[in-house]
Image (cartoon, rainbow, N blue to C red; front, side, top):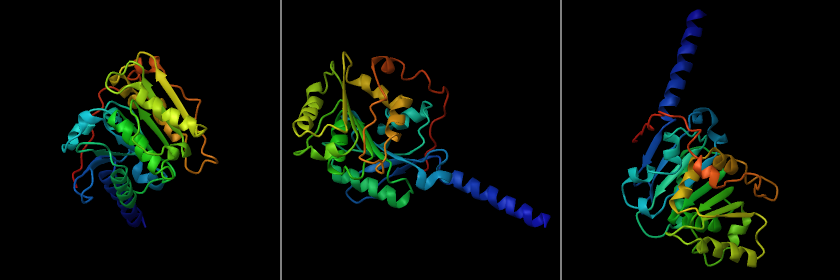
Length: 271
């Protein structure tokens, strides 16, 4: 009897160890989608146990990180925030755009591949991005609003011929008034189009006075950013937007204050 209990305990320990070896890491996905984007998949610390209950965040980078070297897209954004100590209890998908505008259908291919290979809570899928990635966020969310629980677009704009889809999901657009790389007018155009169509019940927007283009990257390091995202679900009746959470210039200044120091880099599992 004791021997059987010991063997059972040993089996459980091995299974947990195998699970932790399989998850809690960063996985590069190269050439898994023919003609599609390469991308990273980050699995959070408790993913082995949460799996189907795990939310998912898609991050779209700006033009400076375009190319075919996946390491580039770890320079800022959620993956870098995790390294700096921000706990993000979600699958994080980070595709790399080789160049040009983000293609909504290619982002969707990455999402669908990940859904097939990594269990997740499909009612809590979010997309965030800045600059070129801000455009990508609005174009993707406006094309597939039925898949996205909430979206946050920083210092970008949209190339959509019809923005109506953006009125179907909780959306937060943020832009700095001192942005010299992408004018705040680009985000304001999207807001005006939604206002003209009377599709603003799920929209919120902030024009941060005096904030530069790069300053908004700090938003990815804030705890409240992810709390805002996670407060939305596709299963919410009428899908209201959370207007209680606020992000201001003081938050930008203090974005790194509560991050743990000395956090080791993510372990990359090249499978």
